[in-house]
Image 1 (cartoon, rainbow, N blue to C red):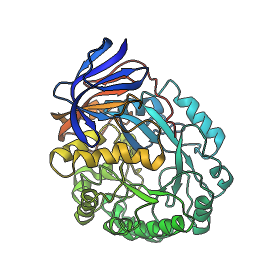
Image 2 (spheres, one colour; image 1 turned 90 degrees about the vertical axis):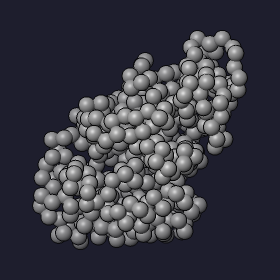
Image 3 (cartoon, rainbow, N blue to C red; image 1 turned 180 degrees about the horizontal axis):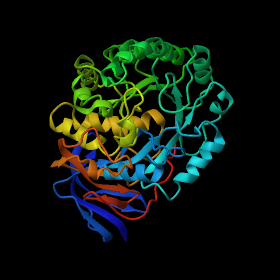
Length: 434
């Protein structure tokens, strides 16, 4: 007997929507087509769209170190309520995940506490080149994270010779927070106390493109894979579009949805993140990049902070905003608005993460693949409200905004883990296999 049959849905298969049933047993897709077998459970997906399980390739769940703000359990709850079946989680914790002992501790902390599947980044430092060379078979390791400019936490590799060491010894994709620390330090004098509008003035576009040019030059010299995270500038879109191949890059939903100065007028320090939300000319160019398939991934950069900290006087307010729960509603709304196609979204949150990072048996609805699904209602309208945010931070930059198109169920390894906003069952997420 089958464990589950998903019936009557419109399934995203081979880049098209097809009316098929899906048969699931032991956490795997065993048949796609017309299915009349017996099953322990039938999911009637009439009027719904069945997507492969969506992957958020940039989240900060703050454990260990800042578990008052978020932890692996609460972050994974936010993920599945938002239709995310797998996450990549970042190493800028306290202590940082930059050696194998801390990495193993993170895996141990995740076991039977995370609802979604997970992989962790290994943090690069200027001194851990030997460990970076030996990560190929490390369980649950998605890649190496390099902070070229300072952000939350203590991980920073700012000097060119040290960045070269990281790339030279890397045995995985190097994902980069790309801001130039020298320029950041030079421009600190532009910070106006109490005025968050000066955030993008301090961390300006030159700070981003200068760093990204250097990263690409080094990665190409050593023939290594670099993935530039949260790209924010028109200069980077134009530059990176000419370096496709081993160089890939991400844009966040925030940078595709809000822009300066409006966001700072409305949200104040709640709109503060690194790299910053910029003006409309950058926003327009990011969309040009998405429309022309220049970008490779869309990741939330889920980086929660408590309200009491976000409301501190700028620049004492921390940078970052939550996003894992809202990535899909925000982007599905953009699909409904005709700003990108469903295929482009699926490339960004399913197929490209699998191809770039080498994730096994995820990202596609195919026989033999894992039975992870994000089931969405393209016509359902929702208003995002702070009180419904599962993250411990309890707020969203999109509070009070209506979006059309939303996940209504999350299925992981053939188990229904979320239905109509309600979390079901136990946290049984597993490390991703590469």
